[in-house]
Length: 121
Image (spheres, rainbow, N blue to C red):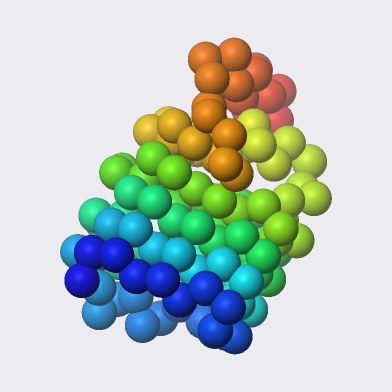
């Protein structure tokens, strides 16, 4: 299984993703889960659409996602963590392979701003 769409299914957790180590594209928007740690068991994940869930802990989420070295596209907007100070900069700083964040291309100036933001934290 390399691609899975579980959008709008009222999922409360992602533990089942451990059974999908070859998963590359995950569409799991508009559910109800808050913990992204299980995604660390999906080393092939390159695209994660996680919009509109209950993810609050940006730091913990980034800790889990930073293990995914192939992750190039991430949608995390519409989660409570989006309100965190420096949301975009922190994500870009922690996920250097990212080319798209919340449906927008990550530009070189975004990376520079992220480095500057991280340096002052």
